[in-house]
Length: 145
Image (cartoon, rainbow, N blue to C red; front, side, top):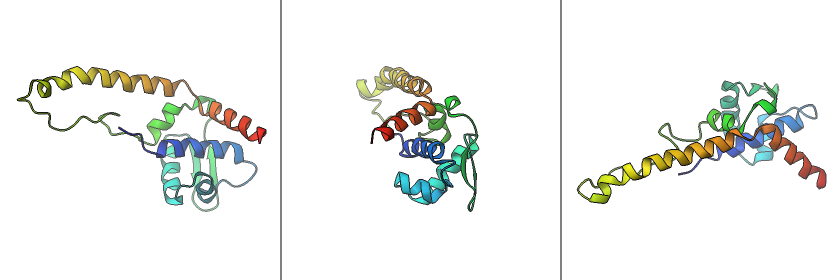
């Protein structure tokens, strides 16, 4: 089980766009410099955020901008936009439990509902935090430096 690093990179990117927009042109190179992520991956994440209607971005020197207010964008929106998990869910079950074994025969029945509930809890928590809150907390820390 692991959510890809594209999720945290996307949150970082959105925070940069909000804070830096108006101060400088927010390009994939600027974002790569802040995130420490290869510019190609940054462009890929920007493309996914653009497809989700969260940012606008033009190739070349246009830079990236927010497409909607960040108090309307949740961590869940970003999680879904950058496609962090497999289509079958956050948890991957081992492929071939031995059906001849009493545990192997029943482990899916015991675990599947619990794993779905754990994923739902995570997703509900992500829905409760907006990117605007992330930006606000980041700016508080920056102002203390």
